[in-house]
Length: 251
Image 1 (tube, rainbow, N blue to C red):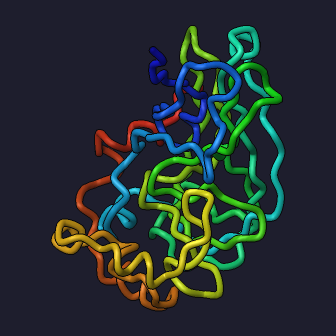
Image 2: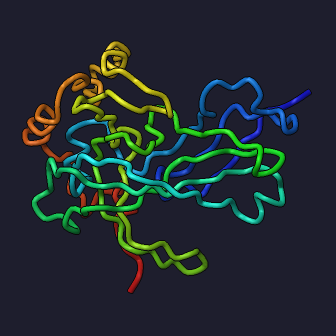
């Protein structure tokens, strides 16, 4: 009997702890018949669903376009094991800054590089299939997004590989499709999505919790800016436990 296995990735930089669901241990034909990306699940770095979350944790909210990408090769251990992940570093061009916190950690960038989902492979790197995180854009070249960005200083913990200072997202809700200037329209999970489809998928729970993307689906960035201007931070970012990843550890 074949069983489902998980593949752990180094995409923690982009989206917290990531694992892949639904890959069966059955040889090189594991991806046969799949019509879309393999979908995995990630643990959010910080709260990211509401306007309050964005103004609490983000340094800037921007409109950005994916303009290029490069593969990130799997580790030697993954290659030896015959299964793992091939990541991507996506070059992002900031088109417009929609909002900034009063004292951001760094000025908004003109460009930056975003680690993103790539492919999973099994039975050798040549047998690969596109991979995406559930409820998150895969970040495809040519598409536009509204993104809540936070500056993460360099990390230098003893025994761990140093992490460079970089721009990071907050979590699942901090990157929103924005093709043709419409919130919710564009690429989601590696597939094209209409804003109307996103809006029609709003659940009663989402309405109660006030999830930002669903509330503003089909509208322009002006509606988002208005929501951010009236939102209140839920707590002080400097002392918030969820913002620990935004504190540098290099002397």
